[in-house]
Structure formats: C-alpha cells, structure tokens
Amino acid sequence: MAEPIRSKRISDLANAAPTPQNTPASTTNSYIASHAAEPSISTIQEEDKAAVVAGLANNPHLLSMIQGKLTGLVGKSSGYISSLPAPVKERISGLKGIQKKHSELEAEFRKEILELEKKYAGLYKPLYARRAEIVIGTIEPSADEIEVGKQEEEDEDDEDIEEEDEDEKDAEPPFPADVKGIPEFWLTALKNMPSLAESITEKDEQALKALIDITVEYIDEPGFKLVFKFAANDFFTNSTISKTYYYQAETTFDGDYIYDHADGDEINWKAGKNLTVKVEKKKQRNKHTKATRTVEKVIPVESFFNFFSPPVAPEDEDDEDDLPEDLEVRLQLDYQLGEEIKDKLVPRAIDWFTGAALEYEDLDGLDQDDFDDYEDEDDDEDNEDDDDDDDENDDAKPKQEAAECKQS
Image (cartoon, rainbow, N blue to C red):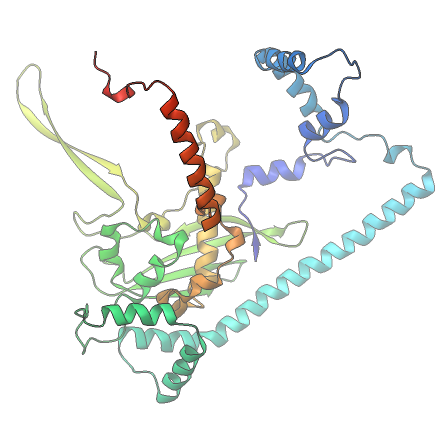
C-alpha cells in the first residue's frame, strides 16, 4: 500500500536532488562501458592491461579523483533536449502537463484504495471478533463453520501432514482434551512467519503465550494501528500494547504513501521481568576505604517486544553525524514488519497457525543464500569419478603432514 520507508532527511534530499536528463542511472558502469573501449593498439598484451588495472587499484588518490569526476556527472544534462527545436520542446512540455494530470488522478486513486481498505476493515471486524472468541474459548464454532472448514481441508493436499500425524498419533498431547479455545494460537502464528520468528526469543515465548488477539485499526490521518491484546501474565500489566504507523501527507511520484514514523505504547514491566534488557551485577572495591559495593548495569538485549520501541529518524539535520550506520535498515525493517502483520498475519491468522500460508509465499523474493546447491544423481556420479581421479593423483604425489598435526 505504501512505498518503502524513507526518513524525513532522506526524502527531503531526494525531492531536492536534480533529475538526470539522458544520463545513465549508474554513472560508473555506463560511463566506463561507453568510454573505456578496448585499446586499438594490437601490441598491448593481456598482462600489460592487468598491470595497468592493478596500478589504478593501488592508487587511491587517482581512484578518488576519477570517482569525483564521475559523481559530478550525475544530474547534468547531456545537452540533447536543449538542442531540440522549439516546437519539439513545447511538445515535451505538453507531455509533462499530461503526466502531471495523470499523477493527480493516481494520487486520488491511492486515496480511494485506502478508503476502500477502511470500508472492508469494518466488514471484516465481526469475523475477527468471532475468531478471537473461538481462540480464547468463550464460544465454539458453529456446525456449518466446521463443515465448511473440513471441506476446505479435503480440497488441500495434506499428505505430508497426515504422515506426520500417523507417526505422532501415539505421542502424548501437549494439552488436555478439555482445554479451552486454541492454546498458543497467536504465538504459533507469529513463529511461523519467518520475518517475525527470528526476533522471538525463548523468554519472549513465555510472555507471548498470553497473546489472545491482534487487530488492525485505521486512524483519521493516513496510517494504521496494530493492537496486541494480552491476558493477565507474569511479565507486564498492559492488557493491550499498540503500535501506530503514520504516512506522510504527500504521496510519491507514483501516488504511493510514504512511511513517516511509528509510535509504540510503553510496556509496564513487572519487577525483574523486562524482556528487552538484562541486568549485570558487578562488585566494586573502593581503593581507599576497601569497602565494596554492587553496581547494576542495564544492557539492551534482542527481544520481540523491541518492536514496540521503533527506531526514530532525526528531525534535526545537525544530529546526522551521531546516527547509527544501520538506522535506515532498521527503519525499513520496522516498516516492513508492520505491513506484514497488517496485510498477511491478521487477515490469514489461521493459515499462519497451521503453516499453510508458507505455501503461498513468493519464493522469488527469497535471497539466494536461502537455497542450497542441488545436484542430481548423475552429477553425484560425475563428482565421485572426479574424486577417484583426484585420489589417484594424490597417491602419485608425496604425502605431506597435515597442518594441524605438525608439532613445534
């Protein structure tokens, strides 16, 4: 719905930055590609070219100068548009006028989408309320709801799940048969979302077992609020902990909303139960009196509940030198987590609880590091043959003592 996060300072710079005209987006690559052509002198050998490149790499001053020259080209006109005849320039201005009208309509389109989201949020509300009551055990689903759900299950391919159930059918159930509702519903759903699971620690799980519902509320200004509802627990006194995301009043060139900032509720932790910090005790001795004292040092730690203390972008540009290097990344991640909870977790909580939602995730969006290299049986046989050849070659060579076996 909204464009990825941008801090105020960064967005202001983006709006003020000149627009390149007929200038490649990647100045370095395109400039080198178009100007650093292969030398036409046939006497230059590959070794000579490699030596030249190595010399450049070892001269930081020269590289800095070249980079500065290339950076200066960004945003500068190539002269093509200014060289066009006056009638052509007027036509270009006319197209810009048409594009301006299109952008205004697109902005209205985005606003209407937001209003449509709010409308259907009201229609979803009674369904979410009924889901919450079933989860906590105040009501039971109707016979019709159960029948529709079973029919849905029959339409799904659950072979793997059935095999797992067959293997574990003799295992002792984790909860008694007369347990109310669906225990640990939201904790399980959160842990099944890869983007959220990595932030949940073992200690967090004990507190998140008390999570009984998550809802989305739309606010008067552009933005939304996530409300986490908790039963009484041993960690904090809050019955609800909310986090509100705000969009900027202006939209992007494409009409998308731009994330501005987020506010989270303060968590009223019970004594010694704050999951976002750890307390280290250290004894100190006075050099003169030899008396000892115990000093406590509070150290921040990773926790899911840090989600409610979002990073803040500075409003004063004078403070930019004191900013952590990863602030932009943290702001981006915080925004993405909020959007995923709003758009994925809350609407399809039951699918995240069962794990079925993982099948619908876009695998194209995963990093290459998430996958291992795959080799079929033929490749394995070829690799085995190669290994045999290597072994034969190794036998023909004098063996050396392994490095870790050498003794001084």
